[in-house]
Image (cartoon, rainbow, N blue to C red; front, side, top):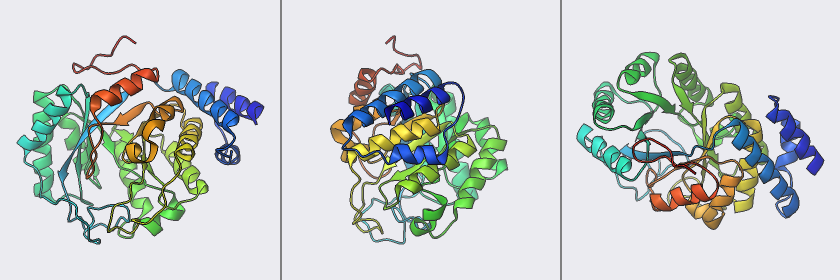
Length: 336
């Protein structure tokens, strides 16, 4: 298996791609075979260093509208289809959005994402978000990202005028498994928004959630779909089951299974930023740094939509130990 891994690595490093069958052989490596897994991790790290980036992509976010979402996503505590204890509130004011961004910038984060719990914003809600981005654009040095549901080409063009350069719109899982998790919109709806982003010249941040009961084959399908869409960033979340949701009793995925999957994703998306997000502390714990050595070169920091995260400084130190250069508060990079 080690010569097989080496051969795939060399092909990827020279601009080639791996096939679905080859990815399947990698993802089926038993996690008990630590020597082979470690070799896979080292190969993924080399691909990251040579084809992706050693500059850490750290992103903080604000949940600008919480709960009462009409969409039925089985993993989400903000869906009105489930009885959860999530804190609900209407759209934050532009000034509140600005304050969240300024707090993130003060912690040394250089990218900031505004997120809303809705399928599509109505006109009034969109205008409020636009005002928030305008304040962030003029009063901070943050690189701005939006995760505000389905977007038309007209709205994307308007977002560009207030400094938004990247759109997050996750595919969540494979085309085949999607309807078992989400019932109110389709996989193709998500892909259409991503294509709109492409046509508008936006960077695309799109990934999914591991550990929702999907198979390894589903995980590969997700990665290959994202490779076809040529996304710049793939967020990798790991399900932290929320009480009251459809997936509250799903068994947690093993840490080494996550890390192996990350390494395989690096072979499939050699140039993308692989960004570890929600559920990483709960599911990986001390294994997070190993995930960074397996291909992760970005983190969502400072907390998630409805759950807390760890200290930003600890995450920065962890990424630096893994060999990445860390953005400073002024947007420059550490010298490491």
